[in-house]
Length: 114
Length: 291
Image (cartoon, rainbow over all chains, first blue to last red):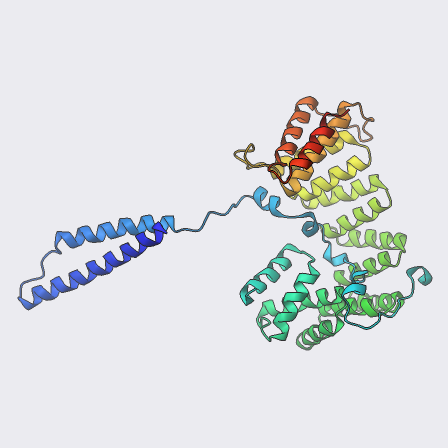
């Protein structure tokens, strides 16, 4: 919350400083004076906006994720790591429960095939 | 669940090799019906994943749709051929399916996936000795397939041939030396084979791998695989302290067994925190002090 507010304030300050610089330069142009240095207040405003913006952006960052191999391994499960999908059996008893067919044709019992 | 969330979840299932057929089918079918299936390269992997989930749940009409799309796009691809074979496994008997895979292997002897499917079908048909022979031949040809070694270990363990299982698992360990899951499987198989010092050694290696980067172990109780490994350490040290059988592999037990026992007990009990686990905690504490 505070981070968003800080970012918003920093953005407004930056835009305000930019607009002030533009106004100042057009004021000098209207008076036909040569372009002098930017007024100190605008410089200070810009630097303050930078600092507030950095603080706000840092606080607004999402929480850090772990990167070590151990932390990754801690999250995995045995079912994932031992799934052996190349050898997986897709003809299980689950088909009797989840099927959309009216009746599953009875497959010949495995022992009859010997 | 939004579209992108569904797609992300499905992609994470593909990456993690999970087999969550119900969830995949629910999300995938919804995406397919809404016409929002991804169109790019990811789309083909999505179709394959959905086809496998559909066959797993015997929803063959959806599987047919996916298979048709894949066959149209990739005619003559070995991957699609194997998928067609899996679809055949769902409706036809053992012999036609085996003939189909033999056909595929005659045409292309390097089609490892078809060979693996044949071994899987042989195992399902209860000709386990034939399946084991084929699997050993397969592993002689394609050594660097950790999946195959794990499957061989599984076959041996289901027949209680623990020494052969340990040999197969040691090959898997050589191929995946950084994977703590293989170490824990090796340790648990050694424990089943009554080789307690070997089991303890492997459990300790595994726990080192898993909890190596914890900077404050007191505040992070073990979960998942770490918890299972600590239980393995506790059981092994307990039996070794009681004077277990001698090790068939001549492994010597570590010296500080008592200290390990105390550490393992502490780690295990720290996982049972909070009011909901109060009862389990008392059960475990009771078991710990019992002789």
